[in-house]
Image (cartoon, rainbow, N blue to C red):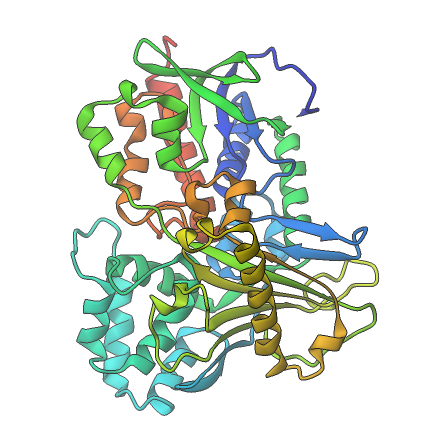
Length: 478
């Protein structure tokens, strides 16, 4: 059932899931479908986590918050863990563009076309390209390799910053990877995209999440929004429930879809874990944040097709640190054409979302006036960037807004507004949480590999399987 915000929950559950990101929702759907009593709690007033949207001007404008692109594997994941209708609504984005001082490339983001561009436009020997992609294909999460992204690119493309930019920049935007992160954080994600290209959900995030909500309710998952959990409870060394609105709700297992550090240090408390585990948890580094500029065009305005995703930059070379600058020189445009992306919306208007990576600290310490000025500067620079593709765009804009790391922090409760969870070491802490505190599991944006829509959904499926094993074997006496 869908609880109203004022409803009091009096039941006990097999599983309580805290947070309704794609990992939390996917786990909830699997467990509910398999007959477990599941309660999904969401602090915000809508499901989806960072995969969300908002309306403006009495629903005349709708904006997806997160970058609209994920690998083809999302089709299989949705068919297996959700339903055929959702899976069949996933379509390919065939026009990905790179425009910067080093090169201008249009691609369908598949391995075959990428290989062709690297050979013909960048002059990389065919055997080198083949060896690089073969190496990526052999990467395994369980390999204990200390190779960094920098090591990987130096081995295959020494001195070729332009090639590195072509290969690395979209993944930096997708999950915050840098040259100093483990190569596996790049290789696995990039290989996923390279299988068949970039895909999106036709109809937008609002339609996707509404279909997921319906499926959850069909599978008897109880849902309550505007329900911020205050505490995760333990009894006899096991997770035993949560405190919500001052009341205790008991459960055999808890799955947190919140930040891993907030889960351990905040919701549970350090005293419930071994000192060695807390030391590892404290050492987990948060990933970076992001800014967005949301642009809605006037009714009736149609623009020429300029690309689905446009990675654009005025910076002379690829530099991950400059991608985070407050005075940003690089941004990605996601263009939502109503006929292609949101055909169900009446009087559909073109929406364009600009996304940039950034540092929380650069925005946190600004005064109120400085903050306002920097947002206005970002908006104006975004329009200038768009004018290179659409010279008349300034006069065609009906509404424009900007979001910063402070916005992300406010609505997602992610510490420091992190858009990409934690660095790689966070995955080990997350995956082993239930070994430290039986009955407590975690699924969220951790380790970069588990970032993004596909990674989040699949991680939810992995943890749902672990929860079922625990319920069958380890919670009989709970």
